[in-house]
Image 1 (tube, helix red, strand yellow):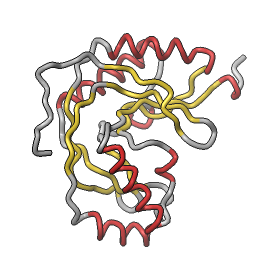
Image 2 (image 1 turned 90 degrees about the horizontal axis):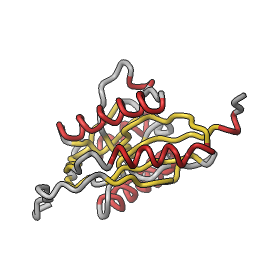
Image 3 (image 1 turned 135 degrees about the vertical axis):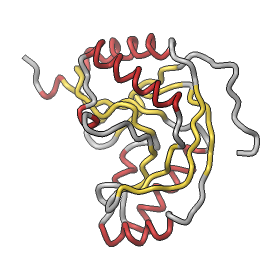
Length: 196
């Protein structure tokens, strides 16, 4: 019989490399200091690919091995983070420029998780995949949202990076940690523009 102690919470995401990682983390700290919103600091900066799910901890290595086999068949791709957007009245995030390669990868990953592990992206049943990097969310009060959005809706931000791995994150009861990184296959034709 499954008990709650047998199961751990995990999710799948893209973790941006440096310097985008540190810039996003600094923006999360900005939200904590100026707008009293710290919930996003419970996880590293990321773009969610598969919503949190429960998995037996003793089968964690099986999950990692299978994910690594899957990602090794997928080509790396570029992602551009551009400016800020919001899901009013609580969420402010760095927007991800529309990207067919990312959309296709997420669809393939979701299909793989469903077929291989019977994992369903339950929160996405009615909503299309909307990639973004959250800076502030559930604990951002409505009045603080208005102030923060007045600041961020006029700010510019742009960074392009190559996605060459995805992360399996695990919850320790308080915060999310990167448990494993699964590499994508190299795509030699990709280059990040020098101007960005």
